Length: 491
Image 1 (cartoon, rainbow, N blue to C red):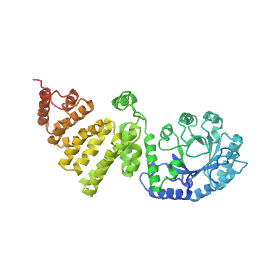
Image 2: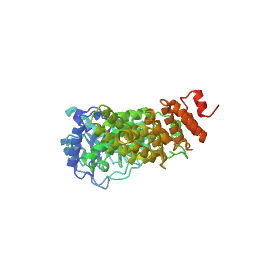
Image 3: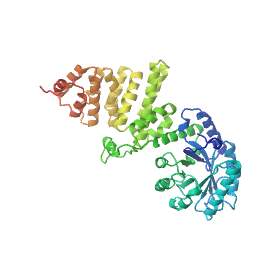
Image 4: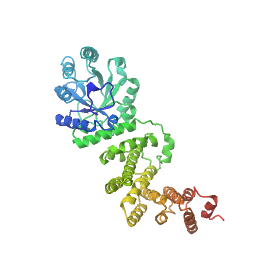
């Protein structure tokens, strides 16, 4: 994750941490190096963002502020980091900023297009780059930065003289500014015009504002205030979380969006009208969850379960069910059964704490049988299971109620007809189609082992009051024609 220039030939996607507002730069470097040691032999190492150090140099002329001292480059290099130096200065050659940055060992050097002697400075940088390469066999990456208002097309004629394009997403000079969303259109254009260049963004970048740029194809993200004041533990969690986001956003966006929006009711007037789809299919999201679930904690998962993106919430839910599946396997293998049962209870506790985000049928139908039901089975008595299920099924929250119904599926599979009928009795005539489908699904599962009993149950219920057609269609799907006629009271 932490990038040692001497060891790396091809640049990976990276987070370039700005030290501008770090307060204690040495403590930040110590934390990053400790994290490096922690993850260096981890299986997920290759999935992580590389970490660069971003040094902001300002002269009080080009921008009305002063950045950090150039000697910070030397300190960062002595601590083993790849250094990305951003010169927000009016006279990079005359005032010796370029020469001093090179002497201190910077790996990248970025100048602004808006300075007075830009072309002269860019040519000078290329001469220095060639000399360093010849004399020291070291590559100096040349970058050009543009302000939010500068059209990216103006750099096309210089395309072959630099290899990194830094697009400012705030006005340069101050940390802590809000990301200018309109710049995303410029980034999109730059990705096409400069297809072989590294694209970097700087200003107001955090977990939320980086999502669209990641999708567009940005390679490097400068982050300052968002990361530099975190404790080592929180910094570790955040770097893992950001890397998972990278893995998700690199997945193909190949879903039929209109169809997906329709079945999930992400339409005007639908129960999920405010949801947002990215377009990643279920199997691919499952693959990411299947990979990462062993390496993440609930603090990392917080970034995903509460996301406005539906696929991010899917990732969180699939991760929770993977955790439970792993704990259940350990119980069956007689590995610390008590601890693993407690772990299942903690997963369900986390789910219940975040139940407001489990707000569509695909999410409830993953959670119910794979998390909630397992919590019931492994940690509660028969009486407690019944009480808890009644609480769910009587909930005014439609999604909690749906979770309660579909959590009956494992009990139906085990042939527990008494529990199933006790609870389905409470929803069998419900008018809401989502409850009808879920109830029919449960009865269809029970039918596999208790066919005659299910047929009789449905026949009697239909006699008392007409059962909704949707429920009957699901419940009777596997029945013979004769059984269906019995249930539907056809003589």
